[in-house]
Length: 433
Image (cartoon, rainbow, N blue to C red; front, side):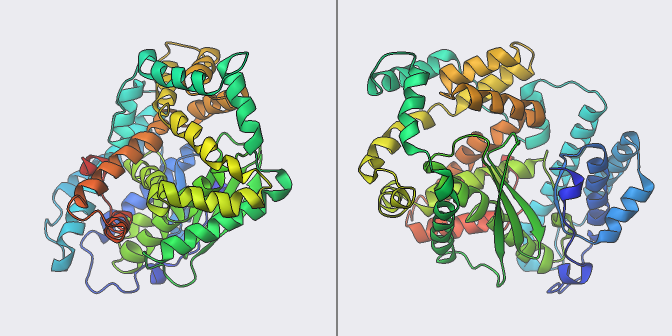
């Protein structure tokens, strides 16, 4: 996630095609993009994707504004935004326009918060997540996880610590290295077919898959513009069979790839809203991105559909015992109930209440992460800090939002429609509640 890996492949002409009215926020949104790029010059992880005009990046690289100057310009933009027209130039865009104004306001505020952190400002875990991601994760204690731990202990009988028994159990479900690409491609095809049946994808969209090592994350989508992505899968640690569908959905269809594709199509190309050509990682947009990517797994496959697909397709491709599909996913369902344990480890660690070793201990005990994976996760805390809330809290907020909107019509087609609309909009995390 450094600046050298950010791609600028769209042109300003391509971005504004389909625009039917002058955008009164054109200059402001352009300045916003340049501010995000300027922060990226100080923070290698900040700019997750950029596909706007290359000359804007060159201008920022030439000017090299200081953090203090970036903060001052952001403050000025916020004042200008407060005076922006409340009504859009195209009446049918009234709801989107309102969301756009809220989005720009909150993204700029988050940018200023990140700049403050880069200048040395200290925030607690919860203060940071509110400032950057527009949300605060609920708190949990050991007691909240003990009942699940007890169920796992009873399920995975044997001698030795529970984490060792769990690790031993999972060994039977590792995708062999030689079968990894074949299994992932089968999962991707299935996820794309299911997504394309409900979501109109623009012609030419696609992504490539690359296998990498020495990363703090398990998978990453690098959006390149022009409806293209590069998806990287980290092979440092064993990859279990459930990760095939999870990563195919989360990083690809209908996750990050589709999210970025729809924003480019509906907001950048059709409306010329250039602020969406840049994606600042430490911003409210990330909670929406990660939350929809995780919830998209459940939209794509019901529990029953996934078991059948795994049993009939992925387990055989991975040369695993298909008769154990239900057993495996029953155990994973219990593990899923421990997802917020990771947040607590991060909160305690980043607030200075425990050290890295104790954080890994907590992850072993309450998140059921074997030591190597727990240590990898602590490295993630070091690099991305409170970003961890975006995965589980984001998923829960997205799920609640979609379920409220489909309460009177819970059919899968309606759920897909609402989900695609969310992917295509600049809605904030606070707007999900």
